[in-house]
Image (cartoon, rainbow, N blue to C red; front, side, top):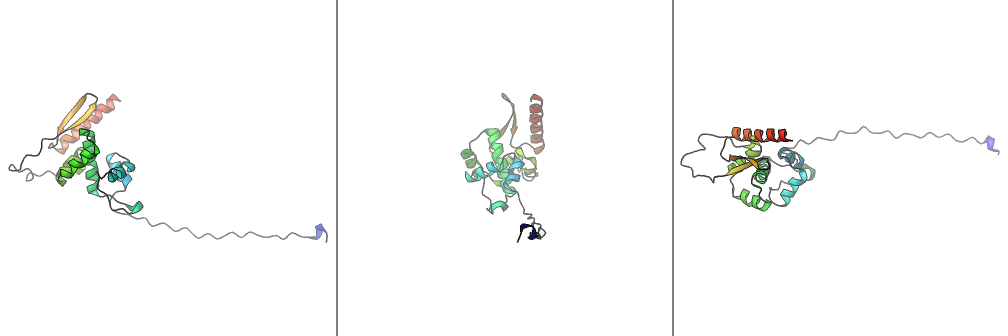
Length: 174
């Protein structure tokens, strides 16, 4: 046989039929992821996990990527950030202080950083026979050497005004 008489066999490559991709189910879980929780307060997800490891922030129920933090975690994290920013306390001191506070006191402390977390003020809550709470003041540093002091018992409107003043002055200095 000569080379010219041999015909190459033509083969067609068959394409594999692809199945249409299934849409992945979207889980809508209640609560916040570590990144969402941190973004609300102004820290990274890594910081949230670090605070949890250091037992400053209560641990959430661990479910891998589906781990969710609840409102109580947001209140706790905002209180941590408020104490760090205003009183410049260490994490161990913050842990001890937050353990001794009631839920309402933590909410009030968190309300300094995030006003929507502040407990609702009611006239019946401020009974004249109630024992006096420690006289706590929070520092809001505007620039080095210049601060605004805000009492812990001030209204959320006054706290928001103080934060607005700080932000406005900082923006003007930058």
